[in-house]
Length: 241
Length: 201
Image 1: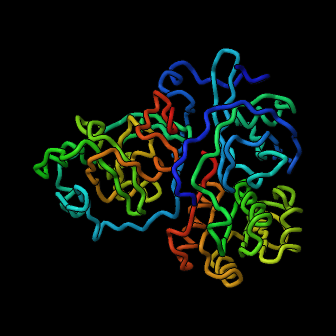
Image 2: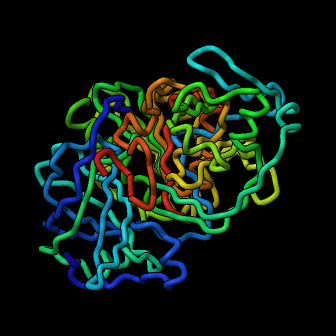
Image 3: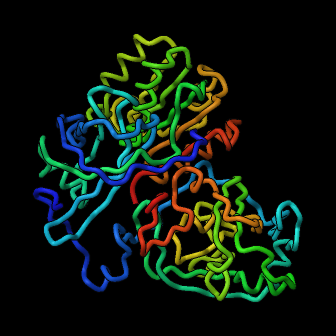
């Protein structure tokens, strides 16, 4: 976690450089880099303006590692009810100018923070954790890191191939993928056994990051504390609502 | 500058006029916090007013329950952009805390302190005159731990990060000292109607 004072950049316009599908419901949007580099795990605010001046703002986590020359990557789930996410899903095109502000937030990790690092994500809550996995690979491959990723089924798993390849190829990074509605683990949720196994494999974490829906984060954060992880070590970020 | 192809779904006028700029209305009560919900029991709970490190007054849970009660209903606004209308709280107003302690506010600012080591700064002028309380009930029931129970600060005219969860005391400070989020670029004052989210807003 960064302890330094900062002022976020004011609103500025960024052009969509690329759009790619990530899962059937999630798309990746690439923008030019921010004025100030982010720390892995941080988010940006996005602001859309209607012709009559009406504005809507939402926050989206950054999936890319700091300094990625391809620019910052947001992964946005096309929620039908979402005023902003729906725009990104069905209207936004490459070349569109979008107002962004950031980087923001204290849910962040950098190479200087060390490890071991335990990451636990649910659904699209994996996005800021993906930035940490990518950052570690580039700038801190010596830091032990383990990601438990809980998602309904394989098709909805964000960056599944990338995460599996990293787990296979990168010494010190491990992935536990839990499919909660498919295959042998259908019906299972992250439980104490899974947490204990992760800690046995990784060592007692120096930093733990939990991101996902409200209930998921509350449950997992409590499990971590029950498993002996100090509360001050656990950082949480909740999506939705 | 309009965003190409964006019309949005502006809420009805009656809702829109109650929403500060950039906010949207939610019926949920989202939970925003830095880490696990601390396990704060009312046994051994104390609420303390300090000046620097010096305690000025302190109450146990049972003593706190004997103080005059205040109710407030209205809208709350989180810097993460949700607003919730017609929330109902009950607790002890800052005015009544000072009166019970037999004190005048010794400085112009406080840092609210939580059991999770969270801090946030508020000017005394934004706590007095019925503007703030230490709340123990939400919607007539004990505040759930996820929402800051057993007791949280309530300063509803400022962004909700100022309403510190699991509050254990208020520390009077000579200067306006930045708290946790304010050190990380959030606005020192945080007026939602002036959209003071971050430093410089």
